[in-house]
Structure formats: C-alpha cells, structure tokens
Image (tube, rainbow, N blue to C red):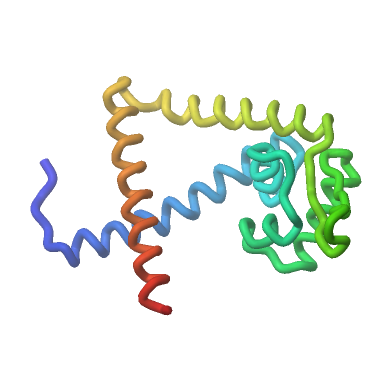
Length: 158
C-alpha cells in the first residue's frame, strides 16, 4: 500500500524519479547505439528524418537543440556513411534540405524495428498486459501534463 504523502513529498519523489529516469534512458540509448554502430545523436537524427521526407538543416538543428557547428559535424558524419544527403533549395539557395538516402531510409527503418524489439524486451519484464497498459497510460498522462506545464511556462515568459 502506498502511504499518503503531501504534495511537496510527492513532488520531491517525482523530481528524483524523473532525474534518475533521464539518466537511465540516456544509458539505455547509449547501450543500444553501441549495438548498431551509431552515436546516440546520429541515432536521434535518423529517427527525426525517418518521420518526414526532408527537413531543413535549421529545423533539424532546432528540433535536436544543436548548434550550427554541431549539426554540420553530425550531418557530415551521416553523409560520409551514405545515410543522408543535403540539397540546396531551388527557391532559396540559403536553405539546405536534408533527406535520407535509400540506404539511410532502409537502415533507419531496420534500426527503428530493433529499437522497438529492445523495448519489448524491457516490457516483457512486467508481469502481465494490464501492467503494461497501466504503465503506458500513466506515462502518456505524465507526458501530456509536462507538455501543458511547459507551454504554460513559455506563455508566462512572454
């Protein structure tokens, strides 16, 4: 049975939990990336690009919260592996579009499937389907609450 705690005590416990979860998720991602010969940042970039036909370099840098020099280095590395290509926009030569190559799309799809299997292995440690559903529902709800909280905080800064 869960003991009754004050809001402050729950907030303290959740702050510790989310801090530890962030560390563990980072470690999980690093371990997974070691099995596929990509750095975590390369893996994340391929995941972003797999969701779309193309992204502008600036959009990708903003989404990944990377500096221009860091995104350039990342893209150079992925381009040298044959996973992406950069194209200058015909409408505005200052805009560079990044797309997955055929090889990159196939590899990113394969890696995505492996990552899903990786998470299936983690979820299989739960007792039953109800626990999985409950975990998912509560994590999804927490994600929505965090999103709403962050949006409100941004509005308050304006």
